[in-house]
Length: 217
Image 1 (tube, rainbow, N blue to C red):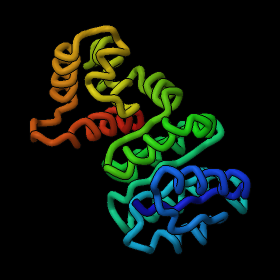
Image 2: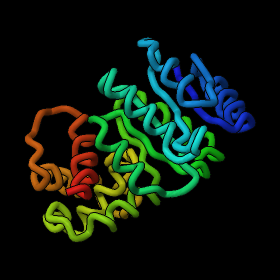
Image 3: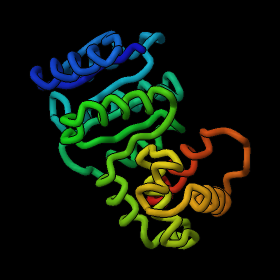
Image 4: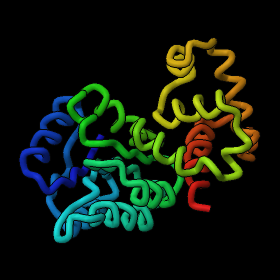
């Protein structure tokens, strides 16, 4: 699996490279600025990009902008962004850039190697990997929106767990309910978000994205 890393801090960039290579990834490029990132992402053989939100020259949202532009050129390009803080605006911009293959993690999560590597793999496979703090922040911001009103408190809990990329079994364990109950809640969530059955696991991704994107309306 080929990955591009974009991080302006040399020490962290080197650490991410070593971590991913030790986990079986091929690092196609490790760059320090958005221009180099944009060039690296013209390679159609890249499977996923790991991108710092804040990059030179202004250290605001250059990395995110470059990643979103790359997704416009190559729809569905899997992107996992890293941020020092929960930045709702940037998280929503990423979520609006297309379906599936999206992740947003706080940099603190990188210290847990297995959790970080799992997130990269999940995003590369077309899933989502959203930091629990990011999910909580977005859900609170969307609290007064109609889509939120459609969901029960338990369904919101299930959706939050789903957004973090957890399986039904893992959600059941976290919420101390049966896996069957989680399945029923998931079906209800899909219905309330107007996602018709299609027999595709991508429906879970669409449910998460559709719900979080509702915070924009």
